[in-house]
Length: 344
Image 1: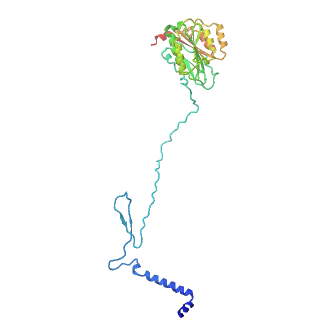
Image 2 (image 1 turned 60 degrees about the vertical axis):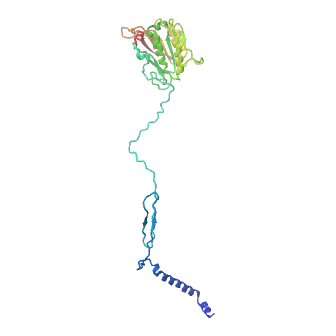
Image 3 (image 1 turned 180 degrees about the vertical axis):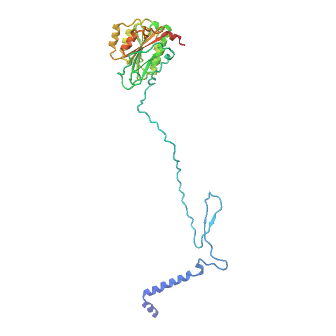
């Protein structure tokens, strides 16, 4: 009872101080013991064992594992280096810049074969000697639109007949089929050149053929609603079949055939005949000019027998065919039919 009273008279902070001082002294005594010293080594051969980390290589890597020693009292940690995978970089291109070709917007696509090369001879005409020359007033550039590349600058496809070139949308061929055209293979040569000329026309161009002797014979189209053919392969085949069945026969009358041709209001009229005689008289020439109000260009191709006649001045002797071409903005040319027969 007396001891309890004595402890009760002692302040609490003194008791706490004595208690914590005892704990601190006990800790210091424990830290000085030999079993807790890291530098202690016994004389009987026993001592502390070294501590280390044992690393194991990847299962894909052959070879034994190894132990990494660590200093006494410290554990070694193996640093892990992250592996960064980068995509391959293409080498820099040191060559010159590659030029790029851009489409030409000024070139518009054409339907069909397009216009032939200027000055290119017709296929049969390449083997037929030329004994005459092309004369006339040339081709004016008043009709049609576009810049064009031919002699008139009409901006549309062109074709030729025995070396006479012209461009347009509508073509009429007036071919003499009188009995005299059967001599020297003249009619066969005219028919072959005609088919070659048609092959140059495109689907947007129209044509009609009038074979005449005493009277004009107009070819029949597949559809009567369309009086003219178009430059398609199917319609060219139809024309080929028709003219193959029409032989040369009869006499020669030029005016009815020319008047029938002008009713179509073509841009170009090719007129081929071996009949410089009988010639058109002045009234007939005037009738043609009156009917040609649309400005059709009339080109005349004369088939003659032998060299072309020339005057004392060295120029070809004029006839109604030259005059007809000159008065209607056309051209004139001459072919010797005797040379057709001699051509192999």
